[in-house]
Length: 122
Image (cartoon, rainbow, N blue to C red; front, side):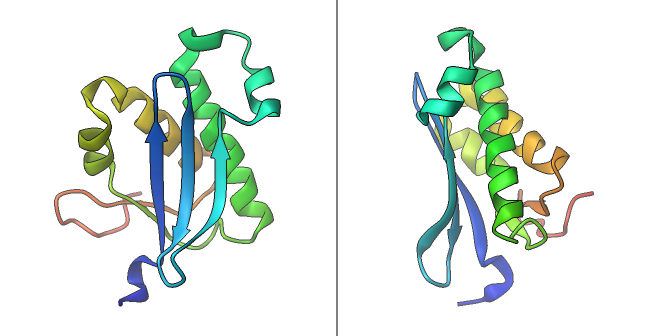
């Protein structure tokens, strides 16, 4: 297996919750995770189910902070944005992009892989 895409971002979006995991493909384990199910994050969102994009952005922020603490923020984290949007449904595209933008805004070395284009997007 190529280590070119060692760390990948996986998203899980339900009607009520958003979870983002960074998976180490070499070991097959989740190395960092963040979810709106977590009590501190859930309690910080005062708008309930009406703030889905805000909740997704908050999950992205928490994930970025945890990546920094674990020393993985500089490692390339690969995300297939088109695949995630297709898999989660068109209605969830704002949540997917909210997470991706939050990660990028907080200094994570995020690589968006779309349509076979594997160059880093700046």
